[in-house]
Image (cartoon, rainbow, N blue to C red; front, side, top):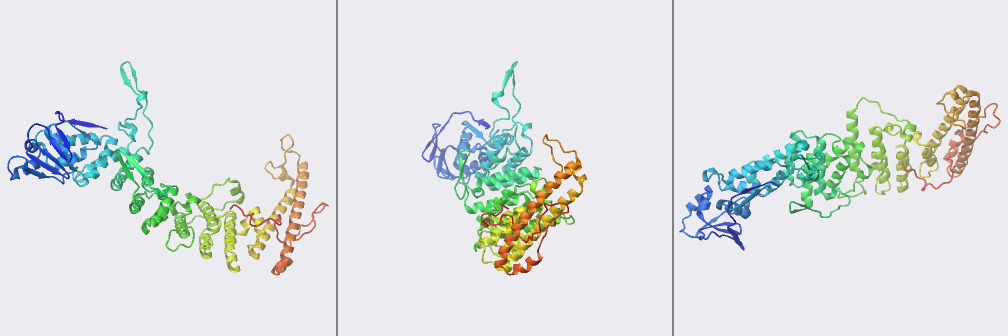
Length: 623
């Protein structure tokens, strides 16, 4: 820390309780009271340096001696600053530092200690030292913090604005190009790397400094000063990402609720010898609202996880509706970047119905849909092939990512018995059909909801099942749905119908390949087989025979599946009369092929999954 020494005389003051005495050997002829402290001094050293003291002493009508009593309770810096000021008047040695120069500058202005009352007076000396302070990052931070003690006077002398401008300039510049000390380092070179060569002192390369080097230093500033600094760096063109990073660092320091582990614990921070405790809930609410107002408006600059944590904290602290709406819109604009665990915001309303705040997620989703549709009004929906989605080879669109997120969220909130049917339906229905390449996720959520709400009417159960498309269920999901007793009968029939269509298409594909031997000659064809040595079969006729045999085995497997489905349907016919009408017309026969003695016999395949009697409750899909 930089310092400047003034005066040359040895210490001539000593303290007795609340009294400061001057040990010059002469009796005191003036008493100056500052707060609870009293200074027994002499008139001449004071009036020769201060215009205000000259006037006050001259106007005093008392006799000579210690009867001249003055009160300076309003002096900036109070007794601590006046002590140094009095020593300066006597020529006693004092040190100017970044921690006392601001109060001394304000106090010297207050007492009019300018050049009219002696060359090199205190105003001139403190101004010169302030310029040195502003050239150093660490000293500027300390000086700005001390401005809080004499804020009105420091504002009037433009010390605060000068200090903030100095810090903003340094924060926006590349610190490697300058010699300031940053983030607690005395310099940018490592002293252990300094060597002497031919009598010349050299140093190693400067340490690398990341863009967040200034975050921690400015986080100790009070909210009003920090806010002014953030606005200043924004005007100087700092990148929005850096501004958002500093705001996140500042918020995490003073808003313990942003961390799940912090709860309402009180956290203390020590800096520059002082202790800063966590603000009260009221102060935290004000701080959060200010932080939200300072966040850059650019989309994607602030982490979605942080925005959702802020939103959750805003609800706990009962922040203003405009603040919460602001956060919801920010999250909605980048909803595809959200994580499921951060969406599980506890319901803190006065009329708590559900465990989680589903209305909040509904508003966020609605805003995402409005922003997404406004961004690409004429674009056609992007449909992702199921196979591509399963093997992960296709990069998901923003809408598909949100669809997966919403389906996962619905599965998490579905067990809540207080979750009303219209609210569940409303949230799920916002996602368009094209955004779900595979409907396993929404089926999983529906199944959990039906299990947790067995009292739903048949009409409601059918309505909620319309949220999924049975044609887009995977084989595993279709197998589970076909055995799911919680689903309406109509839905089970649809699942079985589309599953049989899938089987028919699969069989037709096998027959097509078998009737077209040239397909097996294609290196990328489905029937191209590998030899034992790893090479590809080159004989088309052999490929045809092998492929036909494999097809025949597959048909036999399908016959077994159809037989299993038929057996399950026969069981359903005993308990559901309505099933009989459908079963008479819903028959799928596999016709034997000419010349194939092992072809399958006709079988009715009305619906049943392969695994006939597995426990429904324990076979729920993982979404």
